[in-house]
Image 1 (cartoon, rainbow, N blue to C red):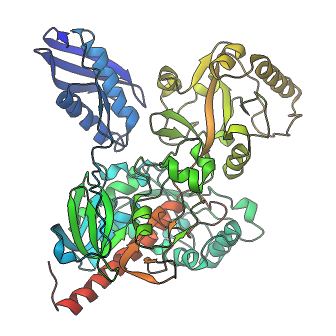
Image 2: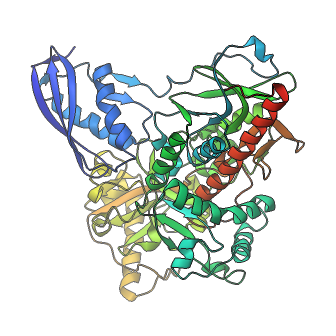
Image 3: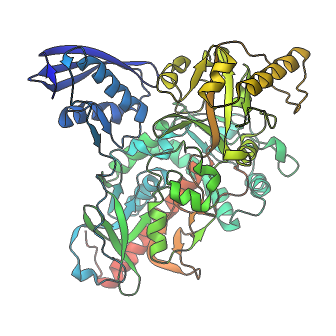
Length: 598
């Protein structure tokens, strides 16, 4: 039991963007209040975590809490700061007890909700349209269904709309064919030209109807986002494989970046719009099963907090990039590293659909074959190596280089996956650490990698031999590899693999980070048609069931087209799903009673 002196104590802990400082009030050997005095964490993404951490620590009388927050590093920074503060108050014994809140949301009752009589069930609430998931697809579907006069309930597993993959993204929306912003920047593009590009990178692996649907609607949906929803876009950038495909299509910038340069710039206005049009949101609720009647018509959803009835159900629960067991079965290359997408990407919606006979498609396919390195619990960041100007190399578990490191990230991911153990060590020096966080994708690491090194995710040493020991590599081999690189750099040529970019020599101290294939999410899932209706294994639509976003498969081809395409797919088919679901609900209502239930 803790033995603490009453008073107010200050503490600090390393966060994502520097130190988080707190004041902790102690009375009668208990933590009674926590105030965050200083923090520079990312606005929006970290807001919910910074509000939640003090409350949970006081409630559970522990600074060792595992919780679903979506901003793990910020949450842990508060915990570190509280630990630092109470250690100054005396003996904090007992305040470090582990409290696991991650799995308390789901409580499966073990019942089968397939082919039941709905009259035998009790329902907590009902709506014309029930949307599962408050990410890009779910919010787009909710807004559109409400605008078609349907009542809408949106169920969200986490505590906030801010915990979606969209929020964690770089804030891009991908659209071609001549958006107003493309035209303002003098970018010449057409729908045919964009379609030709998507066909070239897709190589026939994409669903042609879904591709053409995206081409047809993406530009108008950009105008909807920029106009009606209120997303502020700053510029269009060319961030894809356009130059490599110029034989098939004229290169054009299509990645539309928000002013915030963050997915927060997309998620906040979408959520505000959904609220404004009357969507009812329920957070901290887990959808577990689709409820079907005797004819396999979907009539609602069973959750850990009861049953919810609807004329139409839209699944928008993202993919399964955080589910290691599903990754091992369908995409083992990505089971080695960590996803840099949302913590909620567990494949729930895909599993629920499959349980009632939904067809699955492209389960092996990631949204992007990228690379990432773990920088915290459930946190993965992507090094933008092709833009680095300081020295870096990749070595396998044999401490040797195996290929040039300046290749397109899609190809790099596949090369790394083919190596023994499926990962490499990213070796760099102080020069690169001092350029952080611009050298990594969102969520950005801490300044000078201070927190990552403190927490043990990145390694740092004054000599190559010491670094090798920390990462279990042969010191002699790694020293030879670095010496060979430095010698080649001094002679102006990579004699091993012909790398052209960033030929600079290493200087102490040295850093290492484990680098593995990574993805924001998977791009395989439920099979849908162009109306976002979910299909069964015989390509027949499942009555009353719709889906959109990375819960679905078919929209992506062999190579990722460019930044923002995952968001585009979610918005385009989310809007289609919302419209189709609302129309279906109206038909059901007219058929059943001639009047709306709500």
